[in-house]
Structures are given as structure tokens and as C-alpha cells.
Image 1 (tube, each protein chain N blue to C red):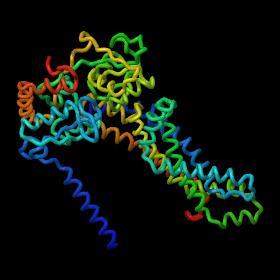
Image 2 (cartoon, helix red, strand yellow):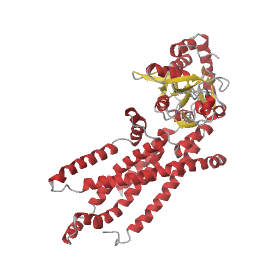
Image 3 (cartoon, each protein chain N blue to C red):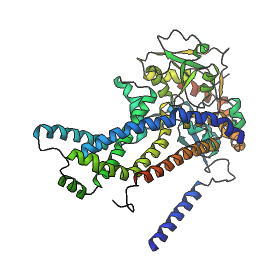
Image 4 (cartoon, each protein chain N blue to C red):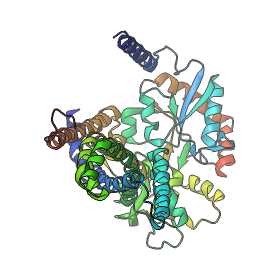
Length: 231
Length: 261
């Protein structure tokens, strides 16, 4: 048993460093950018100015549709449509790019709701206080509301990221040789499914534990201005 | 407090139920379910097993039905993705896998086989305008689609291909079409059947010369405990050869008899 583990570890850790972790990190960065944009579009009220009002409402409809679409369909199906489906209409993407697009869009949809609820959870009093001090909406958002929202959004966002690391195993179904696919390939040779899949699970667990530890550290850092954890 | 206790107890009860449901029945019978032969196959691999009008059809579906009939058993099919098909033998998901599984040394170490029922020649499937691949030795370093853990995967690997994992036959064909891979190693019969439904395809096949790859022996595969069942199936297969059923089935699905050496 030990020699199987030792002989397959290099290959599996290699796949983890080459695909699993980069896929998760790159997709999360894109997903987060998408999420912030989507959340702001849904959060900021349309202005009274007619010229700006209608484009904003259109944007909002698009944002609503995007979040609805990606939260109400399975990630695996999304990946299949992007990788195996789109070539039928002439859009052919390399597997890695297809995976990044799928994971980013999916993470973005979920994380946008996290960020929106964090923005909503900053009390109205803070806005009123800022307006009293002649802050503009943009200043209030950037200097007062967002810093507080970040602290609130951090735990659920870390959750999304850890979820994403585990979800990258789905990329094995669109021909990417990530860690789970490699463990399947080794299993196909040595017929030890329990051992190999447990080993894969253990490696995922190690990565996710490290990430949780990082989350605790960030939480401590962002809470240092908070008295007794209350804002 | 009371609510919590109730919740805890129901959780435990649910877990116990789930776990007892998972326990394998170790009856003295030869099959997983008494009186039924449970067969694992893909169901996405024409002409071996495929769905038509919501029904499972194919050479291996008929073959399994005939074997069960010989043994006086009912038959139950469990369509499963290739990735978990052979592993399902150990978890007792089915009694036997009949899915164009070729005999090879590493499989024989872990599993047992019945007598072969198909002698199959592998083929290279590629685009019609592909002229740089003349035989299997030319796939070295090229992208080739193959299912993880299939015999075709091992063949492609042996000749140094850069393998792109594929989950089923149609996916392999799509990937050649889309230019994601240059070729696939698979059964000639599967390709010919696929071609009937895709008349305008620009894919072709080349039989791989036996000096590079010997013909595969295709046989039912079981976990190591099922020796009794295997022997019963062997008797049934023998009978099916004798009464001409095998030849009849083969001609029905492949247009020729590939059940003989």
C-alpha cells in the first residue's frame, strides 16, 4: 500500500500544482471581479437622470439574468455546454480556458450575492451619517461602506473559494488532467479505487485546510478595528 | 434542548439506515439479487449497448439476455459510465460487466474473465484528409482520444501518444471533428455503426495491423469471488456458440461473424 501511495504522490501533487490550484486561483480572481461588478449593478439605485436611468436598468436586467442562470443550473452542465457544446456554433475553446470561463462565471454568480448581502448589511445610519458630512455616494461607498462590507463578506467568500478548489475536480470531465483525473488514471492501472480516491480526498483536504487557516488569519486582520466584533 | 435531542436521534437513525442499506448481501447465491443476473454496461456504445426509443439495445444486450435465459435467470441492466464500470464489480453494483472489455494481464491480476465472445480488431479513427498518420506508430507525440483505463488507452500509450481522456465514444468522435485530437483508438465496429448515423462525417478508420497490436479477446469480467457464476456463464456461452446464436447475433449487429478467432 505505501509504495503505491509514494509512487503516485509525485504525479498527483504535480497535477495539483499544475491544474487544480491555478484553476481555482485564476477562476476566483475573475469570478470576484465579476461578482463585485454584478453586486454593484444590483445594489446601486438608478439615478434620477433619464439618460442614465435606462441603460442602468438594462445592465441590471442583464446582471439579474446572469446570476439567475448560473445559480439555477449545475456547474457540470455549464462546463459541458462551454467545452463540448459551443463548438457546434463555431466557438471552440481549449480545455483550460473553457474551465476558467465556466468556474469564473459560476463563482461570480454566487459571490455576487454574497457581496450584495454584505453591502446591504452595513446599516443605513452609516449612509445617513456620511451624507450629513457631505460625502458623495461614491465616497460613502468606497471609504465607509465597502471596507465594512469586505469584513462581512470574507467568511462566505472564503467558503466559495474552498468550494471552488473542490469543484475543480469537475474539470476532469472536460479532459483536463487535474488531480482527480490523474488519480482515476492511476486507478485504471492498479485497480485500487479506494486507496487512490482516498488519497485524492486527503490531498484536497490538506489544501482546503491551509485555505481555512488563511481565512482565519485574514478575518483577524480585518477585524482589528472592530470593538468586540460589533460594528 | 429537546429539539436538539430529537434532531440528533433522527440523524443517527438516518445514518444507521443508510449504512445498513450499503451492506453487501453475502448470500450463498451466485448473483447479487437472487434469480437475477445484474449486468453493468455503458449504454452509450453502439452497437455493443445503446439506447433507442428509450430501450437498451445492442449486441451485448441481446447476448446478456440470452446468457441469463440459458441460466434460468432474469436480467437487469445497470447503465454506468466507463470510469466506474469496472470498479463497480468490487462494490457489488453488478454481477458482471459485459461492455466490450478486452482481456489483458493487469485486469487478470485483479478480476476474472469468462471465455471470450468477440475477437476484435482495433482501428485508428481519424479525419479523411489526414495523411501524416499511416499506421499506429505515427501517433507518437500526437493528441489521441481514449477512455481512461480502457485497453485502447493502453495501446495508444504504448505507441507514445499524448492522450486526451474521453468519457465515451461520441465524445471521442466530437474531439476528432473539432480538431482537439488528431485520432482515436477504438473498435472498428463501433465506428462503422456510428458512421451509419453520421453519413456526412469526414472521419475514416484504419485497421491497425496485427503486427503492432494483436486482436483483443473480449470477455465478460467479474470480481474474483464470482468463480461459480463465471463457470455457469461459460457453460451458457458454450451453448450459444453451439446453437448458432452467437453467429446470428454477430451478423445482426456487425454484419459479419466476429465471434470466432
